[in-house]
Image: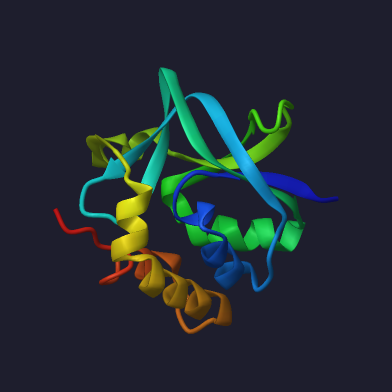
Length: 156
């Protein structure tokens, strides 16, 4: 059975998901009420956290299979938990999976919103290459990819 995914951070960039999954997915803009996309200290990628009154903007990917979700679970690692949420997209409110930053990791929050444009300008190209290596097994541990220079490290 296919599933939907709400992506708010690095996965919102279709080339990143394609590099990880080895294929493309249909996508459309989406929002998630009551959550915020926050910058993490020393990281190029963000965390999604509960934030009453906020709206997280991202992309809703359609038709992900179980194998792709399992790969994403491994990629996201222990800092994140996959959870079903109701998003808004094209006038509808479908259920989708998303990855929330685990409460134990909230101490890593930088206290500012994550800047997708800054990520794209500074890290996207190397992040795509690193994600492709992860999918192909060249990087076996997601933590090694996520904390490597330059894809996983954010300059101040």
